[in-house]
Length: 373
Image: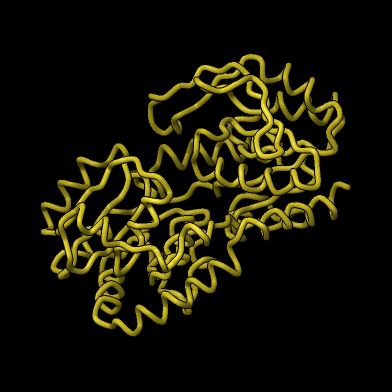
């Protein structure tokens, strides 16, 4: 398994890789090749997974639209050449970092089957620079990488259909992200978080990096005039701009920018009455699945993979970039406690059954059985 980062660095991709790798390691020999971060060893066994970390410089402050942080690993090809010799399959988890040199080594020299997981869909509708750069990469380099793959997993069907050329769809399979339904569950109390912020009224929560693709400005406008507090959990370059927008429209918004544990995050979900994610581009929407697991009604948009996560049994999907549509559904849910309870229960049931990491690991095994082994 190849990815630029691995725990203790945690993002959505790293969470997916960690959960899948440790489950696959119960029956298979799994090695993760990644960048070495401060405080980590060159080689270790972690929950049955052999983790090999190569020396790296991590670039944290890159100009837009480059996605920070980005590791530079000058010895990664040497390590890959050594580690992959006995592998049955080499699986890439970031198509933007591993390019033609890595693919050539894996396919031409080592002659190993190549797998790829698409954690991010083809970028559309973020901004001109980001869209153009990412789409150029996919059209020139990404397409060649995908052509060399024996199998391709996507975190949603939408991710596959918007990113993989149609002629390659036959070797693709969906491997949804999972959620820890034991940690994120309806029994968690939100009282501690409510006491922390000093508020006992209705709360609408959203969660994500403060960037264009999340569409937070539309939710801020939707909340203007609504008798509820909007809690925006996240950090990012648009913080000042979004705070100014909240002040301009008269939205009662709290920007919560602290780093929190998953346990604290579960308490934040528990404290809210409604969870909303107003994304304009979203491959999956992990935070929606987490909120559902906590028994909360959710509102998402029709962007990317969100409609595969949110069904009528657990919440609403609305048009992206529509503050009016968001406002309508927020007001509908806040006005009807019975509806919130019913949709929350439906979301919990769906999250536990559909979005769990055991299923995701089995999806990988089925894919390898079909295309590799």
